[in-house]
Length: 115
Image 1 (cartoon, one colour):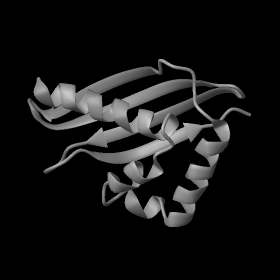
Image 2 (image 1 turned 135 degrees about the horizontal axis):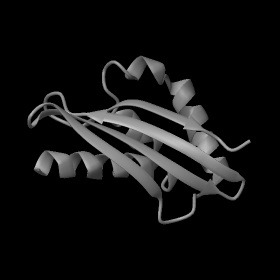
Image 3 (image 1 turned 90 degrees about the vertical axis):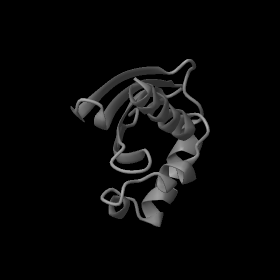
């Protein structure tokens, strides 16, 4: 379905914008109202610094995606996991997205950095 395709392209875009473009503003602009308090400006700045420091991961990105619908075609939720190869080692990013009303939003993002 279109929603399914849109979910996948949004999830992939979030991961690409963060890891490749270091576009933390895009991430901030799409946070869900519930997720916003977890990412105050200080946290966003920290993320920006971390992505800048790590450079770009190997392309093409390896992303596993899973899209589910609460009811037939409505309320899609997407879960994405990227295995990212950096010069310093492997990192994993997980992103959860949903589309409750008018637009796609980011509900959650976790990242484990290479040690």
